[in-house]
Image (cartoon, rainbow, N blue to C red):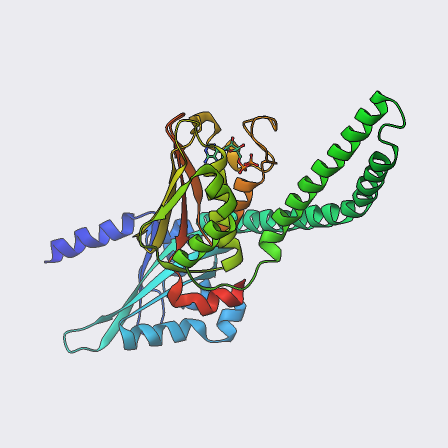
Length: 373
Ligand code: ADP
């Protein structure tokens, strides 16, 4: 028995990554190991016999935290904490501390074992990531605000260019020469395109900041609404849009309708000549997250463009081939991200594409969510 005890104490003594110390019932330090020396900076002979509150910050000592921890450990058997502690040289470290009460054969407390880990490096890394995330969020918001203000303010002078060039076109067509007619047409056309781009940019910058509050939405309803908004294109192309049974999610109805509408619109626009467009929507629940897929039988997308197509104003075709500004998928992705999900595509060139996105199943917490957005 004594041999086992000896082996055990030399093992504890040798541990370097954890400070493992025994405390007397009143909190005085009874033993000290290598880890404690490494983490806290005291040698055994300097510290054994002192009260363990020496490791606490002055404000923790003032509020009686050390004794409180022992009282909790005594009544609950165990106490765990993550907080700042103080080294011998006065510097602070972020500690994970577990205090366990030790009892003798008749159940009386005869001390505590206190195990401390130095998690400063992890804490600093986490703090840094948090700071990066906050910076990123702030700079995104600034960019969004800039895009909003710029596109909003650009509308006014553009309206002037657009309406006066149209006036020129209607009053002077055929009265100047052929070149002049052509040049005016270019100006009118350019102004119109710019208006579309600016409207798209405005819509894009509004997603994050000017959305509606979240509420439960039946996806079958919004798929039907998106389909109804496209009825002319559907009829002209003889498209069929079908779906499996779809769930309710918590979200912004207008934005989610727009999401499906953009995906259906693209499936119809990027169809193959050989057969009418067929679009199918399905959804499945996987680990608390709804996974939607929208499959089409269109021209498909080559794998090297899978990321690029989600970037604002990025398109794979000329305007003459397929009309568009390249905002649709950027908008879709932003809508999905505002709902806490991810979006991506799979496709084989010439064999159709499947757009995937996720939306967390938040029906239970939707009150909190609607306050947060
Ligand atoms: P736009 O439709 O205005 O070009 P999008 O952002 O909606 O802009 O799409 C970006 C590009 O992604 C399109 O130009 C097209 O090349 C490709 N794309 C999008 N949807 C599909 C689809 N269903 N099938 C094939 N290609 C697609």
